[in-house]
Length: 290
Image 1 (cartoon, rainbow, N blue to C red):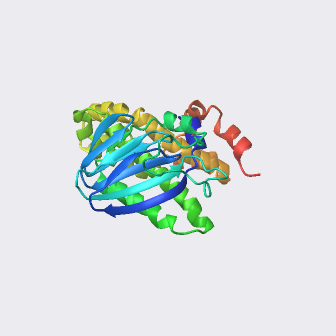
Image 2 (image 1 turned 120 degrees about the vertical axis):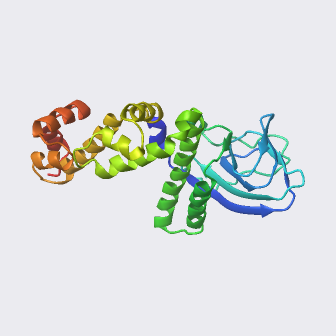
Image 3 (image 1 turned 180 degrees about the horizontal axis):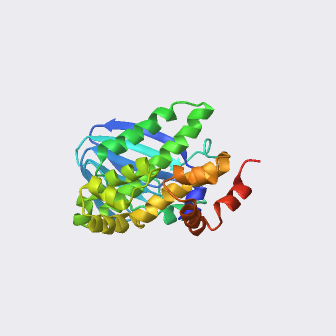
């Protein structure tokens, strides 16, 4: 996944807040990637011969040269649509995509980054649980889309990446057990607590208490959902802060150790070397400002 994320540099071609009375889309193909979100309306969405029910809060992720259509069955729609190139190309702003409904054959396939979409592995149909959050993220993109300055062009890339990050989190949460899903708000509170307090000497038991869970149950839920133990997560927070300090400051290593929650420079050096692969002094020598 890291190789995928290193290449992700989205270019927004359309950001459309679309309201319509009864509406049906005939079978079509597109040459970019579409995120079609139904804020209001019901009907049926067709994708490669499969049928999916449309309900408020449903998002469809459609790739290039894939036949899709939908039928509103007399229902009005309010849609929030994004069309993006997953990686910006020289022709992203000017290429004329054939998106006309009723085409008899797919348009020429110009998107050379379809493997990227496959590696991202988002499902075709995503039921958005936190609809207000998604809509806020969409309108962030929508607002930036109307601007043409350099700053907004950079900001819109970050905004679309936030959209994809949100969708990954939604998918991740949809796949967990009901028992674990019930603990997600507590886990998220605990993560925020660790992020705010990692500079002092705390352990995961303190975060578990803040989450209202027993230490052992908290550790089990945390590892199941985030893929690392709370202690590992806390260590990662500390090491990233320490690397920044070693790179950008001339603070003594003993002071940096204390500033990221270690009472002993020897404990810090051992943890840093185990986590990063080199000692703090060696890391500073390689990465520090000259």
